[in-house]
Image (cartoon, rainbow, N blue to C red; front, top):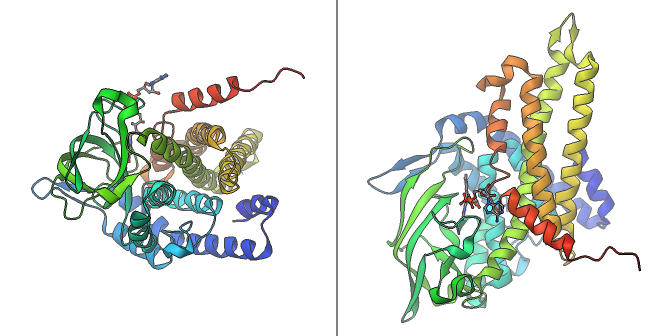
Length: 410
Ligand SMILES: Cc1cc2nc3c(=O)[nH]c(=O)nc-3n(C[C@H](O)[C@H](O)[C@H](O)COP(=O)(O)OP(=O)(O)OC[C@H]3O[C@@H](n4cnc5c(N)ncnc54)[C@H](O)[C@@H]3O)c2cc1C
């Protein structure tokens, strides 16, 4: 943990905050070591199963234990204010924990990451009634968060989504299809974006909280077979007359796009952290392996080609870690962080692919074999340039921010 704490020490935390940061990171590391890492390979192999008849998704048994442990240890609501029964700690610390859990297992880390996004948005845009109802339940892990944004025809261009939301008496009724939904079958509280004024296009979208409990119109219709993240289900959801209570509007009617832009910006810092966690896991395996593997009568670590690879990879991991932690710190300090969130996501997700590829290379043929974990890291890393906005979208965000700046000499 020294690497993270050395960076934290440059952020000016006081003694009490430093103690809290160390304590929480220790707790997270211990839970990862006991409950997640030893099961990661097994969870990857078992994956998630969809029961067509019941519409239920069965996760590996260990996943349910992990959710319970995270809740019992107050790790599901780290940045929820104490007045809502959370721990009231920083977004920076939360993301450092996201790195750690991703190092143990990237699929499992989505449980933690999407929980953070859910409570952050509810706290920022929710009605008082929604905050009082949802935040304590998210903090204890009784409720698990997810995101219902993407549709078959609306991915990068969320403004093109078609799911309709109509007001009926004291609630809203929703009809449409969402796809690629993470945490499906285990999440029960989703942030959702739908069209309340179809004639206004992207200016007619509204964000809501939608629950699965007592909501028969919320139906999981399939899960995807995918390259990595096998310990987390990615599903299609049919909203067939699903209902949303009035108190669950996030922000203003027809202004949902700004809510989602906020969520995406903050979550991109999390993907930066997730990418660093996967890269760090792969790097550690490679740095250990090269000490013991001998060729030409010497450990392969003694070849300069290997040493320079380690230097380059660690430099990139450290830089990506600085990028996500500094963006998170900007958010905690209420500075404008969106360009830096995109940089953290873009850079972290690019280097994690390079690091996981090189970690396989440094293992030679063994790297290609499941037993050595690095092939799983390689598969898991590949999602990071795609979700929460593809890296092409990040380049659009960064270039727009750059073009708006005036660098001409005064
Ligand atoms: C495993 C997994 C989990 C996911 N989890 C969730 C979830 O929990 N909730 C949720 O709502 N969504 C989720 N998603 C969806 C994810 O966010 C989208 O897949 C992503 O935003 C890209 O959308 P798309 O797949 O429709 O690709 P498209 O938008 O069709 O993009 C295809 C390609 O075109 C490029 N492109 C598009 N527009 C432009 C442009 N203007 N300029 C340059 N290039 C462009 C893209 O960068 C990409 O390379 C998940 C996806 C996966 C695979």
